[in-house]
Image (tube, rainbow, N blue to C red; front, side, top):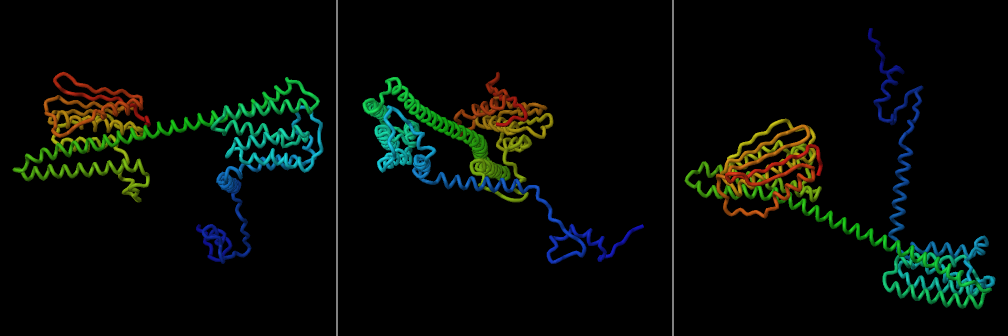
Amino acid sequence: MTEQRSAGSPEHRAAGVGHRESGAGLRTAGLRLRPLVNASRPDRIRHRLDIARKRVGGVWYRLDVVVRDLPFGLLLLIGSFLPALRSNGTVIGGVPDRPHDALAVVVILLESLPLAVRRRWPALSAALVSGGFAADQLLGYHTFAASALGIVLVSTGSHLERHRRSFVAGLTGAYVALAVGLSHLGTGETAAEFTTFYMALCLAWGAGSWLRTTRRAEAERRERVAVETRNAERTRIARELHDVVTHHVTAMVVQAEAARYLTAAPERLEQSLSAVSDTGRRAITDLRHLLDLLNPDHGTRSGDAAAAEPRTPAVGRLLTLVEQTRRAGQPVEFTEEGTPPESTGSSDLVAYRVVQEALTNALKYAHGSRTSVVVRHGEREITVEVSTDGTGSRATAVGGGGRGLAGLRERVDVLGGDFSAGAVAGGGFVVRARIPAGGRA
């Protein structure tokens, strides 16, 4: 028995609530809608806080270095006038304490404010702070701002680039003069106590020097990594250009050479010229894929057309490669055994490049020779073997730089495979490669 409900019944209205958009202008009698609690609200708040922190950090680091270094000096300046910190100053030499006066304010300013330029002008900052520290100890103020001496020594040791030894010698001489003056004005500290304080200052300078060395080593490491990355990328681009350009151009040259002798056979001449055109189109397509690697925004398309064309050659395109070589006048026997796995990583591309380079060399150095291509797909590896019998002749006007086989060996080695290439008895040549499936380069 089917239960029917009218459009005005409460049951019908309750069932249709989920199909209305927020009920704008619609109210259901007797039905109270409770707002849903958004479970992702803490995440949104955290995300907004992260964005705000990044913005504040970006604004802070865009400020001048003097402005960013000024707050620490202001903290020392303010702390020197706080009663709780006034008695926590540095004391060496035993000079009796002296109440703060107008001159004390000048000494405090001299000790704290130069910290603002400790990275822009480290030598000037250290000289001013050292002078203020000497006046602070000789006059007996013993202010809280005197602790700026250790800070400025760390910063100067880290950022001073020129005349470092001369500057250290000057600071040492100034400290010796200060120690002599304090020994006459104060209660008389021992030489061991002055030496201990000097070693503490040397430790601060050494910490700054260590920071400088670490920073320079990190900069050199980053530069070295950048250079190695650029070189590796250039090498990879050179390999791709070699694989794409050499193969297609070699096929076009061989086909054009053959077309010169087909003037008496218009049908075959048209077929040969069509093969040249098709090869040129394939070269343009492969070069476009290579440009996509250099610039991800190059040649972007939307829809199924962009997804239909693969960005990298797959083993399934080997038959097209073989057919192109046959049209260039090279007799090729192609055998493919096994079924390629669903995911082969970079192995399928490397296998394609091995066959491509071997067929290119066959066109260049053994044109017309019987060529055999055997590709075997296993569960864990792909085996490729390309051989020629050496009965043909070398194509004219086609040169080579010898980098093709070397590049293939490097590609296979990266994936942990084996590669070999060499002449065989009878004048032939064979290329063999074992490529582990699933590897990524």
